[in-house]
Image (cartoon, rainbow, N blue to C red):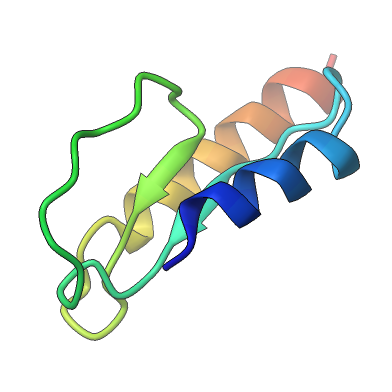
Length: 69
């Protein structure tokens, strides 16, 4: 739930060539937030099955795009 912490971690661990996504779970417990313009950020609710499949599909597509040539 602490978005600023995860964004700091993201900058440290990921280079530009590595496919990754950032997932914020439990959006059903958080107040509505403005969506970030970054396509790699997903707000999900596993409990309610919101954006779970979409986030994984995005990551898989990115991995295919980068690693399958």
